[in-house]
Length: 198
Image (tube, rainbow, N blue to C red; front, side, top):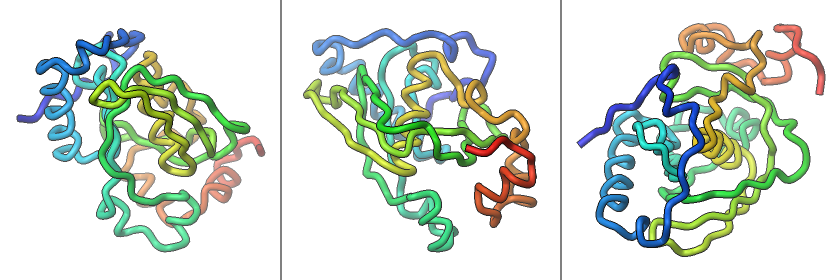
């Protein structure tokens, strides 16, 4: 079964999600929600999904960046994004710490803002303290694209959408992004769109 992904404008996307207790995490209800979210993410497809995106105001998100999602990228594009596959996992009640400055800029999209993309500055490296789907404590050290995914999903748990952080001049349809900017390095995009330097 696939869940409905709510779109920007739904109040749940602007709420801070409620933390889950250990008992709740282990309950059949939450375990079923995790499975349904995984099915929904694969169906979309996407690299991350937060509970608020399926109408549940909870501190719960899932991440999975499959190898096939980046098969059309060149080695240079993979290197620019610092992108490597990430296996499926669950983050619950996460606390994110940015390491360094939020100075890595690249395009992001969102399943709750279907058909659009914009450039967003994120931390290159992050640390996330959270619980997994078994309510076990976990510390994630991530960099590159994986760090971007974590920041994007944890934003959702706190009522923030990428358009709150975007460079507004870069907001565009995915079709236009593909047509005009697909093979252009991020620094060149910034230059052509007259964005401020780092």
